[in-house]
Image 1 (cartoon, rainbow, N blue to C red):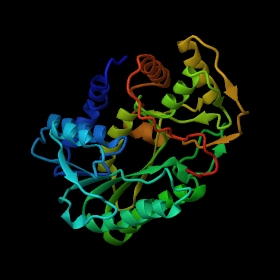
Image 2 (cartoon, one colour):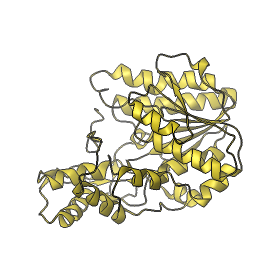
Image 3 (cartoon, helix red, strand yellow):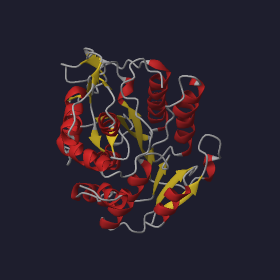
Image 4 (cartoon, rainbow, N blue to C red):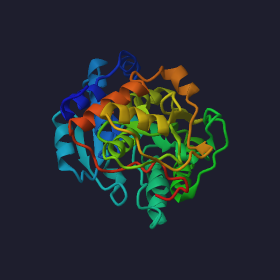
Length: 339
């Protein structure tokens, strides 16, 4: 359990022996684009600690963002991460530092149902500019499981070999992001790893925070989207950094989430038990959901260190203690692709 954000941050940014070993095999600086988002600050700190443990203290970690939250930038700077302030959508990418490795975390999701052009500018046009700026780097690209269609909940989820079928302009623009980096790989030989992530859990936000808050407030949990994949954010960030070793001119594509297909009804019941109340449920489970098969991920990188039951315990204790949350829902239950 955690008693503060500092404790949570420390756990999220402690590198595993496997990550240190993979980082020890590389060299050169790392640029993280979109580092001011939900996952970026912990990934940057994890990278810095991992590089130091791997004997690469001279290699720099650059965190690039507009830094709408200056406190996050100050905190990262205090942990040895170099801050670069740049609006990636409108700034001059030529001013960015050179790097051997790049993690692309920039994405535009919420608000795109009313202004879909924002999704295409952020999720497809910007990647083209980044690919031009870093043709010789290894690039780990955060994508999303939304590029897949909804799949039967009994089928184990989509594999990396299954056909894509994005629903809505956000998901289509994310597939566009993948295609842009694939083009860079095909035409320039850029080494690319594409990570189709489903729902990282940080305790300050995420699917479990959404469900836990709703249960604790005594409000109904809609179970129409009745199944979901989640994963501990520390694991997701580790896999992103370790995937750089797998980046290739024939892009490496990886589903990134936890091994469980979690029934929302049961997750809500688990929170209700921990809060000492009865869950209030609404709707009926649909036969399909956004689900990914992570056999490849877990074969290459091992299972997440934190299982679903522990994540629920941690999340319940976090909410009961009144510790900070982002107040930004994931909207995981959306089925029509409109965010």
